Length: 57
Image 1 (cartoon, one colour):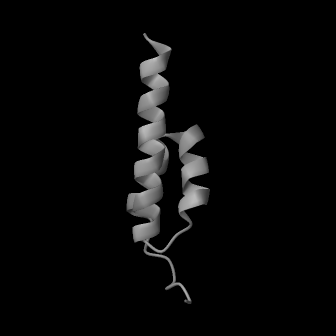
Image 2 (cartoon, one colour):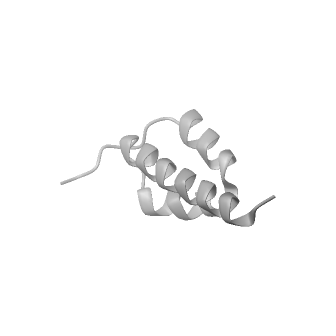
């Protein structure tokens, strides 16, 4: 397996997960970091966990 393709795929997935997390009022940076190590498991967790509390702006 080409490791370059693997890392590009995992990097793309981590960016998608960060966007999903922000849409659910969660920290995109934190979930991006988790996604680098957990990959598809982090995606599953983001989808299954309930929406976070509303952000104060």
